[in-house]
Image (cartoon, rainbow, N blue to C red; front, top):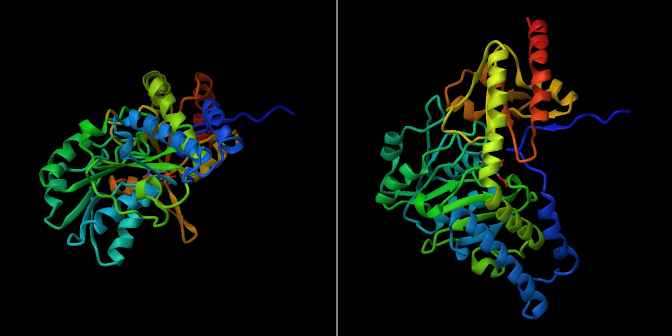
Length: 384
Ligand code: PLP
């Protein structure tokens, strides 16, 4: 029987571990399996490997290695940043973030509100970008943190961190960014961006799931979220996930080498895919800014249809893509990101995110272009 095709267009969800990354990780399971906190040489050798990874990740974002704290995921990094900003400034009880953040931040913000804090979720315009005057006006004397994501996971829209940091810093407020989707897709320079804390995750960067990092600018006090041993210079308790941290470091090194070429190849593939779909399928619309966007992401609405029906048909053909809809109490809720951008529920529910990656080729785009127009035509013919 012929092997079912596999066409993975969901790289913002996760990526396959690169062979070089896996190769770098393996000795940490078989040879260098000591505890990095142990005082003998077998332990300190492992500790050095962690520090090499720290250097590689720091180099990718122009940080000092001492500014990198390894965590278990992007979610933990985000939660740590919010928690630390409030714990280290107990007189401040207000946070500012946007309505299009990852659910890690939206839900943590709501959890803080339940605990008596105040959180401003800034609205965005139709293009997915916040109104900067409103952002500026929302900062108060008791604001502990402003947190704005670098690139949105559903639309790929890139938010103007440099402009935002200028006025956040002028007001003396801590500035955090969730850069989980930006890492490896666009160059990141924490110095020129004026960032105090930045969340990163390995599994969007061709490294394993379950390891992340928080950049904490030298001079910014970090209150640990996981309280335990003195790991990560007392900033994050818990024995380090050594093999995965080594994988993260190797992935960062590869990303630094490949970022330019991958970005232009992926962008060309994405543009060909998107332009053809917009041209060939009636009543398709792009969601989010066309130009201020990651080169790999395309979020499209197919009028009159539900994304889940389209995704099911694509899945039958071995094509992986996703929608931002969330299952809540047995029915589908439209994506909070698209809703915040002002899309009516029906259009949001008919939206699909295609996210390309390093491994995609022209053949993947051709395969999608061969099938998707027919699927849409067929589903529309069946839909009253
Ligand atoms: N932030 C953004 C923008 C994301 O896209 C994701 C994952 O999809 C996360 C945070 C959470 O990262 P992790 O899966 O490592 O917890």
